[in-house]
Length: 288
Image 1 (tube, helix red, strand yellow):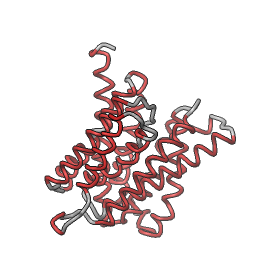
Image 2 (cartoon, rainbow, N blue to C red):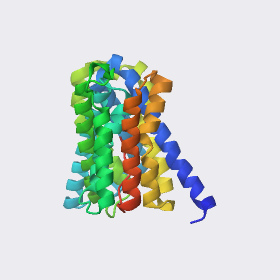
Image 3 (cartoon, helix red, strand yellow):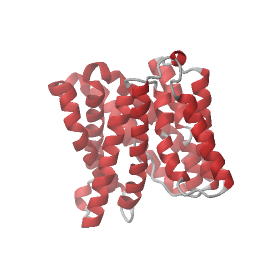
Image 4 (cartoon, one colour):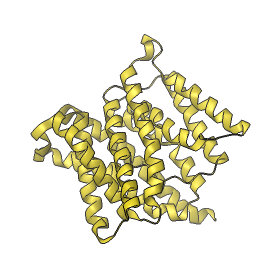
C-alpha cells in the first residue's frame, strides 16, 4: 500500500484516539456533579441515542446466537466503562488507560509460544509493576484505582472477544445495539449515584460532548479508516492511547505523572507494539 494511500486512514485513526482521550478528560469534569456512575450513564446513553439514530439498527434482523453475542458484547462494554470511570476517581487518566490496556494486550498474547512473545509478556508485566503504588511517594496512584482499572482491562478483553463474535457478518448497527445495551447496564448505577440530577438540562452540553468525543465520532472515524488500513498498523496506532491519555490529562485536567510511572507506561506501550508486530490478530476498535 502506498504511503499516500495510507496517510488519510492513519490520520483518521489518530484523530479518533485524540477525541477519545479528550472525551475522557471532559467526562472527569462531570464527576463533581454526577459522580463516576452518573458520568458513565450520561456518556453511554447519549452515545447510544446518536448511534441508534444514525445507524437505525431496527432495520436489521439478528438471529438468536448473534443477539446473545451482542448482549454479551454490550454487557462487557458497560462494565468496562463503569470500572474505567470509577478508576478515574482515584488515579490519573494516563495511568488508568495504561493499566486498562493490559486487557487487550493479554488477549493479543494469549497462547503465545515464541521466545520473542515471552519477552513482550515480561516487558508488559515489568511496566505494570512500575505503575503500582509500592511506596507513599507514588502520589496520586491509589490502590483502589489500580484494581478498578485492571477490572476495566479484563472487561476490555471480554469486549474484544464478544465483539468479534457479535460483529461477524454484521455492520455498524451492531455497535449501536452494543452501546444501547451498555447504556441500559450503566443507567441504574448512574441513577443510584446522581438521581434526578442526570435530567438537569445544564449537564446536557458537557454530557453530549463526552458522548460524541468518546464514542460517536471516534467510532465513525474508525469505520471510515479500518477498511483501508492493515490490522497490524491499526494495533500499533492504538498502542499510543496511554500517551495520548497522559497528554490529555496534563493539558485539560492538569494531572502530572511521575517519571517511574511514565517508564511503566512506555514499557506497556512498547510491549503492545511488539505484540502487534509479531502476532497477527484481528480485533475490533475499542469504544472505551
